[in-house]
Image 1 (cartoon, helix red, strand yellow):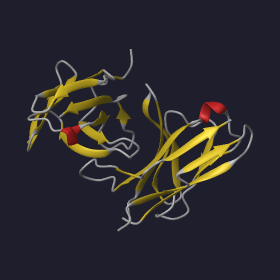
Image 2 (cartoon, rainbow over the protein chains, first blue to last red; image 1 turned 45 degrees about the vertical axis):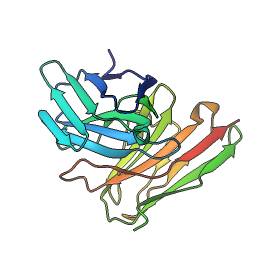
Image 3 (tube, one colour; image 1 turned 180 degrees about the vertical axis):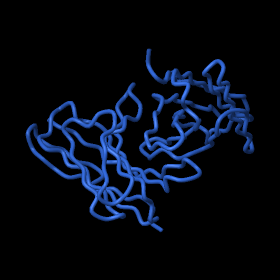
Image 4 (cartoon, rainbow over the protein chains, first blue to last red; image 1 turned 135 degrees about the horizontal axis):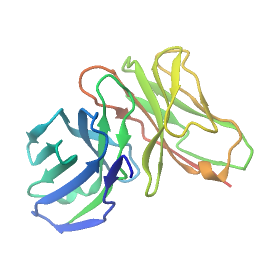
Length: 111
Length: 113
């Protein structure tokens, strides 16, 4: 079993739709749960992160962590064409510098 | 601040050639790392450093060397390039404390023929 699983997509949605992106993981020691956004031919940039568990909201974006199911989600409300990018989940344990990334989900929001 | 810079942006090598990918950051970050990104494989950690003089292996270190003589620079050396090393290489840096944000460079696209 892979340590992190993420559906690669592509996922195409109309503008204004609610988008749900998900990852599953197997390492119960993970404490940091992150979402990075990567535009085409650019480096990834941190979008949101959660420490330990629970939900976090930032504008149109909501990150959820379900540690019992080893499942994390990123929701995008009122999606915009500018949200078209690849979204990578990432994980880390406390006190280490080894981040584990998912393969990324390619999202296209159609105007 | 320039952030994280990488040179070159593009490179074509022949099998067996060696080269160094440069990475520099001006944010005084302790932690720096190198990743390669391949289709369907995501970002995989090659080597990382937690400070000047300290480096360690990541998930896919074979065929690569690193050193960290200054806080700012973290070059990645390909000893004898192979077609399997064709990839996009990203350098990243972070404070290593608090918010787990890594700042990524723009990447180097490497093709090995």
